[in-house]
Image: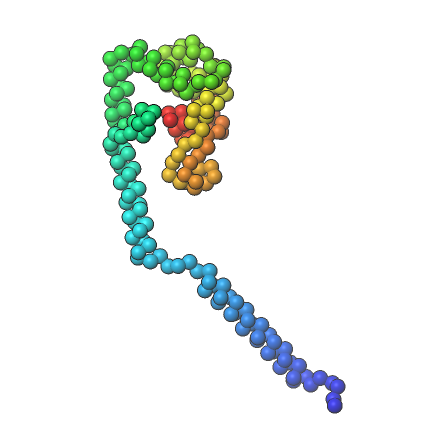
Length: 195
């Protein structure tokens, strides 16, 4: 027997091993590609999504253009923006002092439990007519006002989006970062304040 390896056989064995490795890798790549591809968007799935979008838009249009109950137990109704603006104009035009007292009552309701907010300072600032309500209430205690708003409306529900906390959950938990000490607020803070 010859103990020395034959150079042609060794090179052939290496070539077969390398070629086999490439075949195995190609098979694995095909399997990964085949089993990880999402299903194609079928016509039936597209129709379901289009129907859901149409229903969502119809519900939004209904909510924007028609009045309705939000919570009948609490007496909360949904009004068209135009109707609400006309009501405010009418109330302030007919009896400004009654409209001020109604506004004060709503603000006091939001601010229940805020120890630093005094009824007199809040009334005086609202009566002075500053449009920046959070800014005017700052002297009554900015933190107290923000904490009262958060306590009254700790969560704002919306259409799922990136800005929800956590993202795409359908609501946003209100925090102090939704308000600014200069009286400005982000959208969620405004929703909590008016909510």
